[in-house]
Length: 294
Image 1 (cartoon, one colour):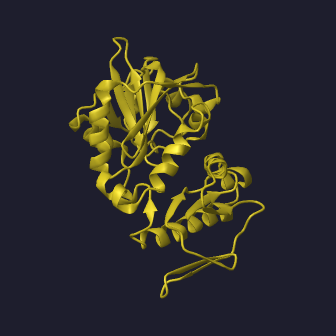
Image 2 (cartoon, one colour):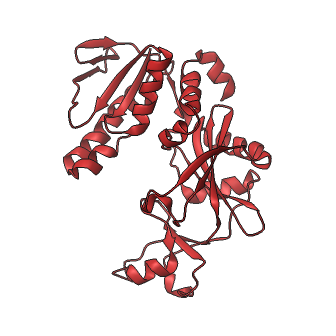
């Protein structure tokens, strides 16, 4: 039985649950949201999980840390609640070695964007020229081709000029990636086990998340990135990820980052459920088959 745990408002959880129903998978959902507050009882000594009075014995789990509840309510309590639910279920699953879980080997590792860039280059993936600094005044502010994004993520990518003109405190500036602006369409490649799925994202915005103005369509995975990307995923202990690429004027494809808990609902929708199918296929395999792939 598959346990699907996450947020009631998370469209990715919703997409996976709908696919479970269509495939008639054996599953149980653990959803937290405005109308859903399940009762959980995890007995550490007996290593048993009870949900709403029902004893569960899942053989696999798909879990996402929910950010959508806090986005809807702006409640600090809801933000803390989502994190504590996530840590509770994740702790239970990680302590059960026989239970199948995406990215089990990487849960104790930090997903560091700087390290990932350097590892990607070591694996044979071209990366764009990159400076990391908080000394933004050392750059030509009028250069519209320079973009910035925080080292740890958490906010949108903007032009360096727009960021400098809108910031409040120069002294409080923290380290950011500084790179040359690359060209659309952006390429995103999902990895589920050994399978890779390519998509192109077309948008007029520098960061399509700023206006939700994006067209997504499936595309072939570029042959030159297949082996290096699989090496990178193996090095990071990942069996589920999404990597982002963009091109320069010459057509050179550059690796930008790898996401270890990517959103996938919109990409799954334009490819007739292929991503959800791959996730469910991977999680419902026998344990020895998964071990052979890691």
